[in-house]
Length: 446
Image (cartoon, rainbow, N blue to C red; front, side):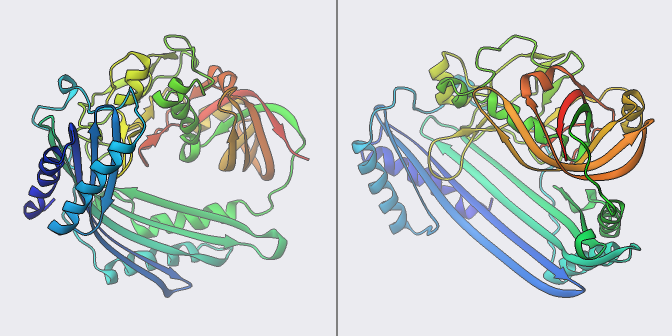
């Protein structure tokens, strides 16, 4: 965050208080990004974005309003304040709104989380990375066509200032490379892709490695067949296993619990997973895609076991939901420039166990290895869950043949209680898991 802009959120807060607000918070965000896409060796797309935005939220009693703008002029700032205060006077009262309690704010010197890579890529450099990934994917024998390769670079900064005296700043960056190709022809075509993102470009696999994996995945799926409907052991590959955590995070979010819309609403302190599962939220992991020195309301964050040997230990709370539940914020507020905060995790990951993917398949003997998942649906009140999947049938602990057009389904509380993690944890995003084995899942095939 460049120093010449540091005064802007302070000015907004000061003007809001002078105009009649009882409390205020202001955010300024900067973002620069560049992405390049290629297809069949030709440049297909170049996108560049540069933005600077202001956000203001004000309170008058228990009434709140928020506004945002991308014009940083003093005239626009004055209009923001005027509109926000006028809107707050007309807003309905909310007994749970307000700034985060001062005793929960992050006051210590923030840790060095190493989230910002100073390297900046040109369009030519990103094009070369995208080409390298796509060329490697197309070079895999059996690949017939390409959906393209891409590479991107992003950096940005965020400064939060409140009338309670909090000021927090953090910067971050991200780089990514991906490729997607098609193997086979006609009705026998299969897609395969791979993409990786990291805070620092140096932490990414080589573009050629990403492309090779994309090509091999597509070719490996040739000859996919349908299987009979049955009940069998299912193993979800580590690349997509974290998708099961998304539903869990939604079920333990403070706003959902406060509304009573969660299949886990009465389960705090109870065994909800098998005792093989410990789920950690670590906001301090160096170069983590979900790392942060404070949450989006300025509350101190901390590493914690959300699930400890299967037992649910906490909800994920922002200030508003914490007040509704008579609890304290857990430092999980997440917000944009305007509007009240929501809730999100930081670096969530299931701790690995002893068995790798081959070991899990050997333990199961036969079953379904899921390598792609799409269209998951869930009933938030009951936890009934289903998803379209594809992958491989395995027998004798070895892959037998690729399978497709399958649906897996079950009640998430039951699935969680039977879940066994593998050892192959990879940090690919802000939510990660090793391969996960679940016995006795319903599989709908032909």
